Length: 344
Image (tube, rainbow, N blue to C red; front, side, top):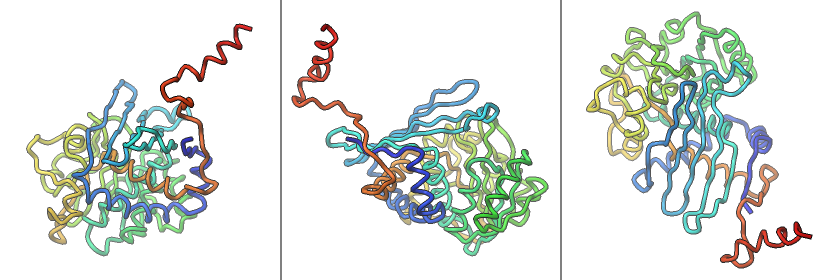
């Protein structure tokens, strides 16, 4: 039997513990895996692009566990009442190849993306950062806001989106969460004076959400919306002023903000900062960019965290996913009685 966490179980788990608590608890698991980054068998995600979106498979493994996530990105889906991004994931035992967990990952990915952003901000943003500019009030926005509050104490949010209804939605949730949030009149207004700037828009296009002139000394930019070829959010000039940090450089070169700059443009993988193999922020005026596209190590950490948290609780069930005949060499035995009955 395989542990199974569906949407109802995931919602119950998150409601019991609280989103902010789960994000805070997930961060150490992410840090642990990032610090042993070289131990993982890594590959850039396998993507199938179409004019309307992308479908991706994100695999990774170490010597004990294999994990993958299936995820899509279809920015026009909300027009028909569907989510832009949906996902599910699997965790498997490397020794046997058997799956041990199957889980929904739309909600879980929101937790892991926010926790990864917060982990990076804790390592790269100025100490004492309080003001968080949020450009994009879609599905990620509330998770990003509570993550920055939990990890670095950024408890004041300025939000802007081209969709006023999305801002209204965010402000309603922010009030429930006890977040001090204000509606900005523009992206420029939101970013002015901010310590941390998060860009999380959904349009599959090369856009300039943040111009070079908007970026002030000492800012940390958390760029999470540019996550596929031809989709960016930052003015390329910013990357020439800033120190840029990434997850897995081969993937980010294809999908991240750095697809706009030459292949030899210097970047630092975040795991090297977390292991003290490379410097992060070196001065209060330094501009730092976390060019985050999402990587499979993060999903695997989130799946392991989920498994360990829900095991033995009401927040999971078992499903019969693997065919197991009594004789492992006689798979046909599972269907032969049915075949015989059909002839009667």
